[in-house]
Length: 191
Image 1 (tube, rainbow, N blue to C red):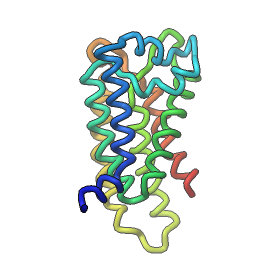
Image 2: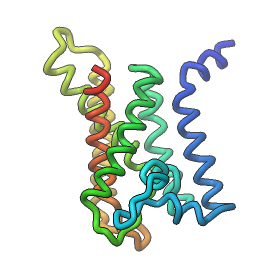
Image 3: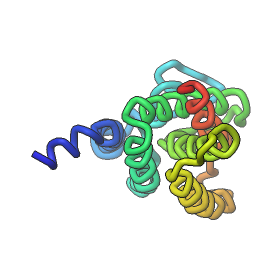
Image 4: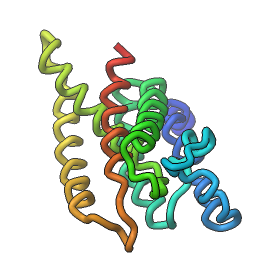
């Protein structure tokens, strides 16, 4: 009974991670053409790519790195704020990352992966930290969680962004930056 309750409480992270994993595995193993169809190319923006680029990945390592950084933050967001907050962070972050890529990226590039949502979670925690410091009469205990997550993931991202390419591919700084801004925006939307 307790495991069923726990699984139901955290259904958002399992649903989102399962969707990303399923679509990526289909793309990586069975339908490689999905990558070309859903990858966002600023020179030819399509609605399917605008919405779906976060769900396809360059390779299995790319998929695992994104899920490995997303899942712990997603579980904590659900624990502190609920499933609706997680869905809000993911949707807004992915859409803002796509918009930022179309506006700011080199036109001859291809962007894909769930990194925008991962950065969005970090932006959400940073916005919550600032909100707690500026607007709370009593600072909640979860501000310690915000600090730890921000520090831990920013160290990870700093190492990631210090590399201009990953296995010969240029990293999409625009998708990461605008995903981060999407996480901040999602907390503002929830207020």
